[in-house]
Image (cartoon, rainbow, N blue to C red):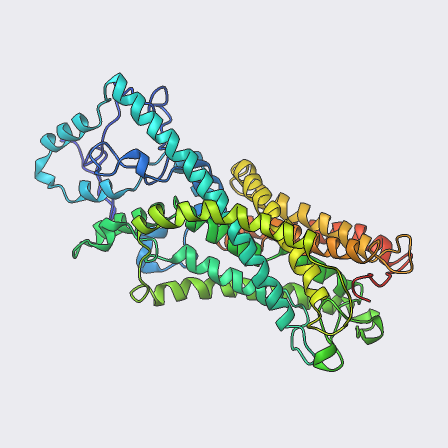
Length: 518
């Protein structure tokens, strides 16, 4: 008699309730790929699902390569071993993990089948997944292709729109946290903490983007709950609104390049400390005579303080957001899938490009004047804010597509996020050097408008191209050794680039007051 292997809690026999793939399957998504099959989407309906393929979001590149989407939930609960067992970011991107069967709502229906049905249930499942006729197969393929195209359009539109929102919120937070007597003078800190908090909330959330079958399901067993949670996490990560919030808003609200710039100015003893009356102090308007920096012997402690506070508090914000999602799991109303498809998705395609065009027109048509040096001078806000909004969608989209192309190359090292963070920091270093170098006049930045454009590139393009929220999510979800290597390499390489770019000017000719700061 053959010895039976004990089954782990929540596991199943190999043939129990699983649709088997055979050589006779000729549907478009399986044709020629039976050996290494993976679905177009981790939440793709089967033939017996009531939802048509054209009604599903389909963006498989984003689902497997965007770490904001692919990473497991940040919080590990020993009571949820069936959710987080061996769930590291490296495993999610590995070939073995990507060949797993999709945990959709059909998986729950398989769970509920009686074990005594046996061969009859398997025969029924095999009949349901058999290939459709050639004409029906072409129609399904066309619907899936249309769904994928529209999903990409929705996703790009959400990214553009939320890059505006994230940039505005970051600039407002920086301005509100820069005042005389502030306990933390690196003003981007709280934007990074806030963006990491929202990222943790979205990663752990089990309510806002719930599957309809999960919301209405009755009391179920622990084994069935495993499939429900997996189905929910797989479903929400295919939704363009979720990608827009995680990649667009959180990525644009946080800025890795600004964080590394603060680390460099700590080394060079140039951290601006606000002094003077509140009405005269602005993050964009600080005369050099009012700067206060520590002596050279304390530069090491200054950069250590910046690194520890930025990284430590951002990681804490990620975990706090995840815990907040669990705390409010039964309080928040779910977002209706029908409402998203019929109202939000078509509306965002119209709003996002029109908003971008409007911002560009405002930059071109608004009059230029400079009459007051106080915080509320319209010219001070017009330059940094509007120019930042002009460049922010470009930075967000570049980060999105670079992550799609590169993040899956090295499972243990998120290459895409590393490239955009280091590359964006290098671009910021060049813009910062140009802004503080004397270019054809007594002031830096090549004139008042040129200084504002450079500030917009740093706050808008570089701020949205680089991200702290995704970076800390990757650190928290990677194996410890990989996380240390990735984190140290990101900070070390980026900081070294600024030492070369900005330091070569700072420690030779010195900084000149930018024209738009004078």
